[in-house]
Image (cartoon, rainbow, N blue to C red; front, side):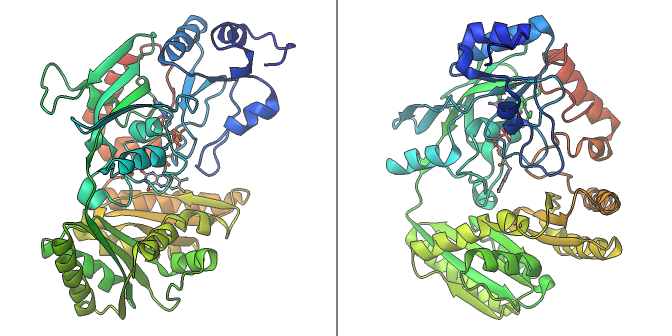
Length: 462
Ligand SMILES: Cc1cc2nc3c(=O)[nH]c(=O)nc-3n(C[C@H](O)[C@H](O)[C@H](O)COP(=O)(O)OP(=O)(O)OC[C@H]3O[C@@H](n4cnc5c(N)ncnc54)[C@H](O)[C@@H]3O)c2cc1C
């Protein structure tokens, strides 16, 4: 912190954290003004970097005393504006809380601080033969605290579920600085309301997550990956339905459309077919004989649904290369235009073909460039608008197209967000999806836990 600063809140925070962990210089604050969401930016008043739960509690008490908003931040990879500061906010950054506290091999659990990077805890589990399945595309950067706050999904969601399915305990600091433990190592525990689940997906609006206890599972013995190429989108969607109908649940069932295939190939150079309308990246894991059987059935089903080729990854390295290419879809698309708006409309799997068709028609209607990829097996699509936020007229068309896409997803029984959260970006659509009763219930929970609206105010709802 600059000695010339004379902000009483910064002074109070310096007494708790010391001057090096309280940032007030404009050039330092600029870095915390945005997250991964396009076209949203707001410089915070102060950044406070906490290292312990007690420091987090003390920061929240200062914020309460001065009635300053607190925006908790992990790595800032969020895609709904959740960690974009509100005006005058303290950004409470938790990336320094990065210790793995315990790996319990008798209970198959792991306890970590909120700032641990997702891939690091995945590797720590892998090192002892265990498996933490949720793998958001951002897992090499995102924190587990951010994953819990967004209830993030990933490429393995179809078989293994999302972050919520692995969180068995949480340490949370409430708006008034109270520290609570919710849940624990018991497989069964029905004492009181399930408050742990209330905080999962709460987007930093109900409390600050400081520690996470995770359930781990045995590492699958075998994995096989195939890349299936389809000349028509509908054929790819039908192949997915047929795989599920055959009672096969692959761990990964990802999809790239033609536009995304071209961008990823130009970015990653792995030989993706440029004449295809869709490719599916499919991975199955488990016991070696079950995997061999499933992968053969998957190949057969894809070919029976007009796939022009189905290529098996020769080894783990080639499989990893394909997965990495899929994970790079967002970055590859982001190279094309100044602004990349990545959405995550999600529908029941049976409606995927309808939804994809509608996205293409809407893009045409509004004269917009849209590439679509996503977690096909979860019905979770990422229609990605390639645009320019400085072109006001085009941004209006993007808004109108997004609104129609969300309305259509809702009409199909879908949701405005499958994994990225509501944040700032989608709050205007939330009431439409939930209806008045559920929407007001959400607000009453917020009022009960944060009556002064200090925690991430203006996110999820106004
Ligand atoms: C290239 C790319 C790929 C992605 N792929 C996926 C994907 O496959 N699946 C998916 O679900 N998401 C994905 N995302 C979105 C994003 O990575 C996730 O939402 C991730 O969980 C955010 O983690 P973070 O540490 O960056 O959190 P941040 O962006 O810093 O914060 C996200 C939200 O959580 C709150 N928060 C953060 N930490 C805490 C805490 N300790 N306590 C309370 N609240 C907190 C913030 O206030 C904010 O509202 C992707 C993003 C990018 C850029």
